[in-house]
Amino acid sequence: MRRLIFGISVYFAFLTIHPSALPAQTLAGRLLDASAGTPIALGRVSLADLDGDPVVFTVADTEGFFSLTAPGPGDFWVSAQSLFYWDFADGPVTLSSSDTILVEFRLTPHPTQLDELVVRGEPPESGVWIRLLPQGLPRRHALQLGR
Image (cartoon, rainbow, N blue to C red; front, side, top):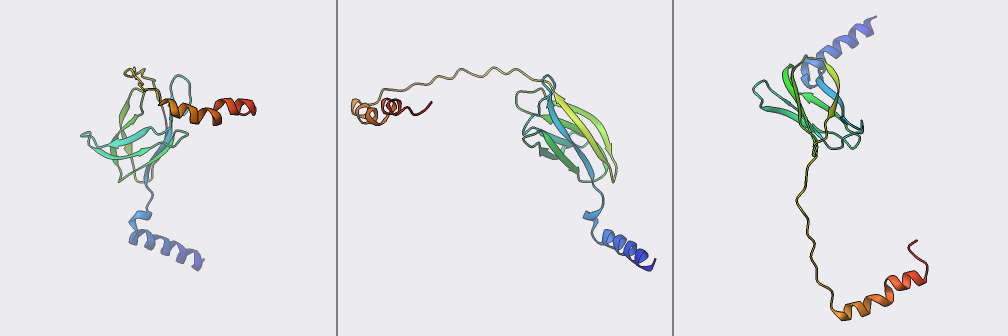
């Protein structure tokens, strides 16, 4: 019994000395495509204070998973963004001292038309073709490579 009481005392003393060891306010979850249900890689998830000022952000991994720890308890706006998707924002969300809130963001695809890409080039000098052809595609074809 004395060991248990001693252990609990040491634990609380450690928490008092090291406030970083206190439970954190965490928002964790996954970014998914609303249409296909597939993960959205490298999307950004952020928390902002009630004035809209950014507090902290993270980037989802290649499977869409993320974990975000708030700097302290409070009310926050939550947002998620990714290229080719409409931005999402919601809140305020209240995070208390030991909360872990699990969420799933389903972002709606945003069709984006890219500018036209034009590739221009000039044919190489005739001597280059002569040097490349003996070792290039005809030889690979003769050796039955590249199938």
